[in-house]
Length: 208
Image 1 (cartoon, rainbow, N blue to C red):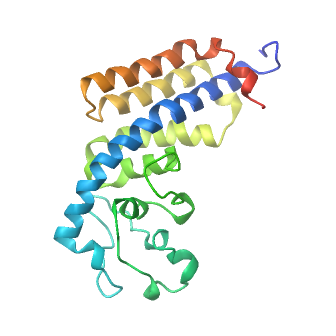
Image 2 (cartoon, rainbow, N blue to C red):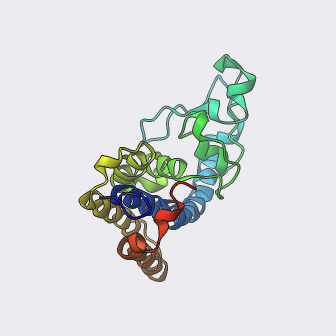
């Protein structure tokens, strides 16, 4: 049933979930990823010489992840070089380390800031060693929330799907080991959007 503005309930649910994902969940993911990636990078430099790699000797995976690291995503390799033999394999900081876990089209960020979007954040949570314990929860959010939001079929945005999206985001938050105060704050913000988002007039912004 469409609202008086012509925006359907399904469209409004999609919009509210998108706002919660982008403005509540993603900023807190950026913060915790940055906190964990700094010591992870230092560990990889100390133990594997990640900052001095060459084509003759470089990390192809970082267990327990089996993902093949994407060196074309760092040092402008995808633009400057066609042949992997000529890539610059030196991983110079924790941001570059994060980029190894994603394709070049996802790696257009220079810090863990607003340019580091939900897709990039979830890719790290699904593959990087510091987040092994939350991988199944991150995969649920990536597949059932972020990807379904980005590749939208409005007919699928039922009330049950809407509620499940919030449930999955909340479950990820509760497993990320935030401080009790931060966890309570994040969950409260998600609940606010879940319960009141449909009544906040957000439908007026849908087609602006």
